[in-house]
Image (cartoon, rainbow, N blue to C red; front, side):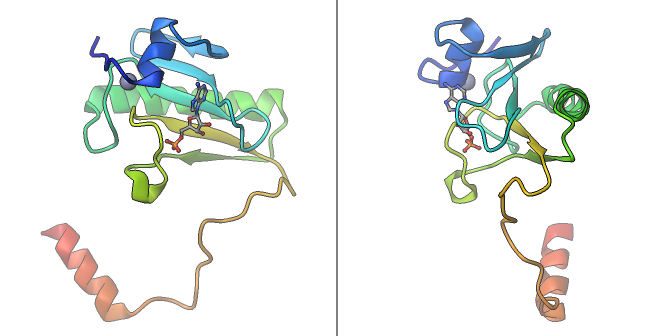
Length: 138
Ligand code: AMP
Ligand code: ZN
């Protein structure tokens, strides 16, 4: 399994740093976030070290995503969560602070105080949207 010497999440998987483990299988590890956004905030990570969504092996991404679905369902059952957000950050500009891919599973509760990262406006500039779509299509 690929590990990175200075990666805190690799150290958590190896048991060198303590964590509140929730689940583990051959390719994924689930533990509680140490600074929870809400009650039950968990992190799902691949055991194989990789930096972010652009580098993760597709099979590991599939395994992490399916595990996140399990944890989301479980959070709704055990915490009676009203909803769940999945969050992934890629790059420091996108709020990533730990550079080992992870999916946040954040149970949501009515009036939990979290705010949306953006408010949809009146619609964007149609030409700019079309150009961006064309750029992505390539
Ligand atoms: P991100 O900002 O998306 O990279 O998220 C990193 C997350 O890792 C943050 O929510 C931190 O609270 C969490 N975190 C950092 N160190 C630990 C740790 N030792 N145990 C559990 N969660 C951690
Ligand atoms: Zn790592």
